[in-house]
Image (cartoon, rainbow, N blue to C red; front, side, top):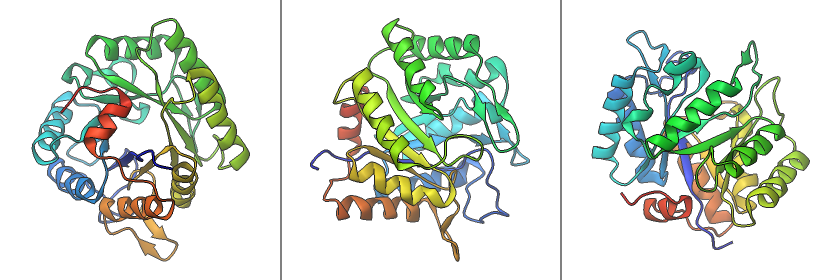
Amino acid sequence: MTKPCIICVAITGSLPTKENNPAVPITISEQIESTQEAFEAGATIAHCHVRDDEGKPTSDPERFAALKAGLEKHCPGMIVQLSTGGRSGAGATRGGMLPLSPDMASLSVGSNNFPTRVYENPPDLVDWLASEMATYGVKPEIEAFDLSHIFQAARMWKDGRIKDTPYVQFVMGVKNAMPVDRDVFDYYIHTVQRLFGEDAPWCAAGIGSNQIVLNDWAISSGGHARTGLEDNVRLDKDRLAPSNAALVKRAVELCEKYERPVASYTQARDMLGLRAA
């Protein structure tokens, strides 16, 4: 277990509010400050959403540009990953920030159920987002909510729609989508290694109280981990998380438990095939 572990912090998301947890960073300045604390705690990827003046999700490229610039200034070397998720807009608006050429962007390659809606990712939109990422030198992170999404990413990689070896993230614990199941998790790892190669990097994210479960499974299995207030606003059933940094520190403690070093931003960029900072 000597492979360094990349820790991604999902700082805000589209759903959590100050009412859920006052620590959720909403404004650009709050997000920059919260991410800097998480970066100093050990996170090397910042997964980013932006909100409008009312605190609602948006894909406004100008807000993404301001956040990206602030993170590059205050978290030098950190990998900036912008979200193209469907809660922040529809159609091509979801990729409006890709010309900013962030290091990475999320890419959901298939549709699935969410708690109260269908998360739609039609093939033509997926292909367009992948094409924009290739045009602007953005590495996609494949958000796999289902086994079929891993196979679709493999098809897109083999036919050139996705450049370089994909970075696949298993998302488990979304209501009505893939539950937290250890046998499925292990099969996901097996499938990634079979389709992309034994050394292909992968990550895992757990929603709500399952966040710490997936952190443990991923870190102990040689993968990388995602944490942060987007997915989970609590430390446990009795305590709210005081910050994104506090959730990152939990992941760092698991790395120490399993005797894995925490990846520096230089190591993370090298493992993911990203340009130097």
